[in-house]
Length: 179
Image (cartoon, rainbow, N blue to C red; front, side, top):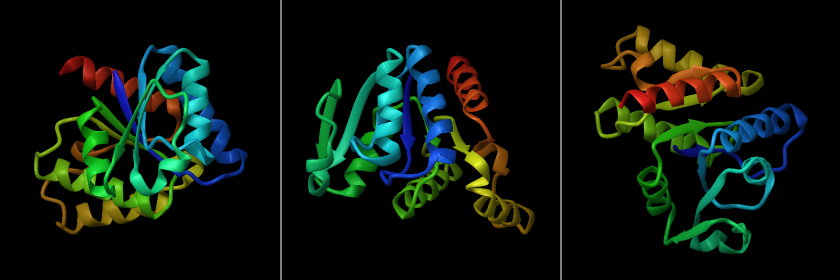
């Protein structure tokens, strides 16, 4: 399975890097391919290293203005012209999506994916990996949107909420296997 992971390229402390590394190792050991933003920095590097060292493949999709940060030993590296093209390529190359801890770029990617799912334009399982409660505030807001009628479909149909990597991967494997 090709698993697109949206996450930070920032250097973060162990409460984020350790669970990210563990999840990456599960991806690699499961024989899956990581499809990610291609950067060889921060949390993106941690996940790519874990997948590579555990036997998985790496497919990066970087963007022209970040080309200098692209991982050199990826199995495949695509350079998009802009961020919109990058997101489209990442989704096109994947069978499933995981959103991990990240900044504004990751939040933009997450909300676009949920909007696509809401309209039935993305038929791939999406998991929000809520490491150490990083997305508690977003989940609270999404639940409020659902409760107050802002979401035309149940939140559970848009995204699977996971607190740890093993549960996230098990959900993706079960979901993709059923398609």
